[in-house]
Amino acid sequence: MATELGPTPVKKPASGGNGLHHAPKGVGEDNVIARQGKWASWLLAPTIIALAVVIVYPIISAIVMSFQADAGVDPETGFFTEGGPAGFTNYINWIAQQCASPAGGTVACPPGTLGSQFWSATATTFFFTVVTVALETVLGFWMAMIMARTFKGRSLVRAAVLVPWAIPTAVTAKLWLFIFAFEGIANKLFNTTILWTGSEWPAKWAVIIADVWKTTPFMALLILAGLQMIPAEVYEAAKVDGATAWQRFRMITLPLVKPALMVAILFRTLDALRMFDLPYILTGGANNTTTLSILVINQIRQGFNVAAALSTITFIIIFLVAFIFVRFLGANVVEQQTGASKGKK
Amino acid sequence: MTAATELRAQQDRGRKVAQNREKWAQGRTYISALVILIWCLAPAYWMVVTAFRDVGFTYDTSILPSHVTLDNFKTAFDTSFGNRFGQALLNSVFIGVVVTVVSLLIGVFAAYALARLNFRFKFLVLGFILGASMFPGVALITPLFQLFTNIGWMGTYQALIIPNISFVLPLTVYTMTSFFREMPWELEESARVDGCTQGQAFRKVIMPLAAPAIFTTAILAFISSWNEFLIASQLSSDATQPVTVAIASFAGAQPNQIPYTAIMAAGTIVTIPLVILVLVFQRKIVAGLTAGAVK
Image (cartoon, rainbow over all chains, first blue to last red; front, side, top):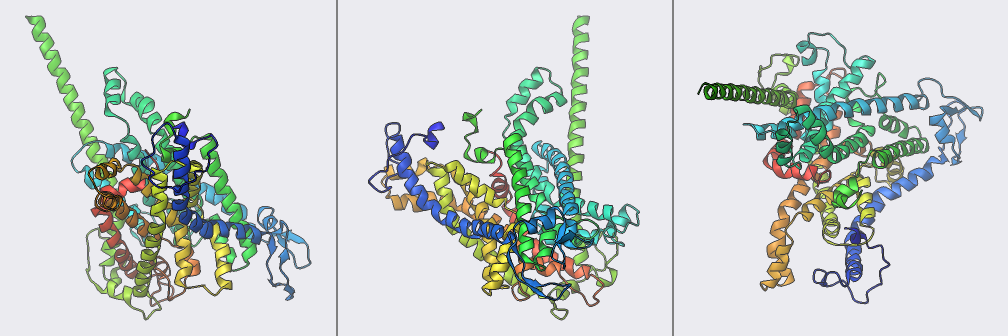
């Protein structure tokens, strides 16, 4: 496996990359890698170029924009203000909640402005992320354990879990809005009279429930795939040795499913951190359900450059979380992908 | 003698206890399975039931279908309140097909390279592609919003298609990579030994084997494009909006009243084809979905 990456310097072959499957193994591995590398770069080029255009270019221009001031008419003085370099003003607008004041300096963003909502939106985003991912992990694990057993109708259950996943989030949001309507089925079933989208905690729970409903299946399927990689003999052996169900779960299932579980949690966490559709449609971001993504969208029409600063902050937050996962929690997506995990520690 | 009977009785009892435990475990499995079924299907069922319910009985909470009518489907396609659901359906299909075809055409080569070839920086490339698929849409939207405004692309199809490629293409590449990795490529070699040309080996052996993988990837790609909302909600116009945006902004006769029955009818129309696709190709789709995480 280690030779795959070929740490030795590779000489450029003179010939083109033909007959890539026929090179003798062992003797000229460097040559094979070089020749295949040439092929690979041709094959990968379209994807890399396309991603550079649709992702790398926007990121870079967002970063450039975030250091520019928004041009426009000052709402208070009526003067047209020029754009131009702004230093960290746009970032300060969000992080220190200092808005540009008519007098020229900065003042604390008045309540109600978007700038004043940064920290509450961050808190809401993390709250949603932690709660939904925790619930989805526990529920998903439970669902996966059930689906891993053999029983009549198992394929029916496996098919059913795909239904919430297949429904578009926009439709899911409208569906749960209807379920949580004042005269809706939720209040009727639980015999409550809650204005679900009318105040902070019910609104937050409405978003969380809808999100858990929609995405637990995905989690369950990822964990199920991990569970199915565990050979049955391991359990048999443990049973013979007298391990209890809880011991089997803790000493076999958990450690063996951990790589798949960590990747599932990583995927879901990054997805939850950029949550937009559900709260945007379900609550419109009212009652403290504004996530960072919603805040960016609300800001766009008030000024691109300030929005660019916030989207860059969001990007950095998500990047840091992903980094922490991969670095400290051992969620190694790439190794999972290349199947090279065995060779490493 | 007595000792033997005693022992046999004990064994019998032991077997009975084990059987009971087995039965109890089996029973619990069925109850759990039922809970999962209800949890997953009940809200979707509620959407369909409401879609077929007379608008005057929107808040009827009888569990079984009641006041059944098809009017809501007519209302969903009605354009007199400014809704353009029919157009939106066509838009979504068009955008989805273009995004899927483009992503597959580009991605299939990358997937082949990642699955079959050894080269340096493989980890780096894979990391880049996986990172790209996890990329937050909001980080793209601001610069694209400004760029498309400047070049007059706001509300055009290309303004919706290009950003969609940014998350569909990475998904396509890594799903196909893990499919390709599992294909029996030795067969290609054997076909060559048996006298096939490289082209024949590719056409007659590799293509039929790769077709299901490519098809499944196409379904996953189409679904993720079909479900996209964030970018479309900002960059589309009334004429180009996809169904997700149309449903989110669905208006009724009274501005203060949300036309739930019509929305549920629209939601049903949008969802049913996907659910059928997903159920028919269930096994393959699950394999594709989980491809990135295990193995």
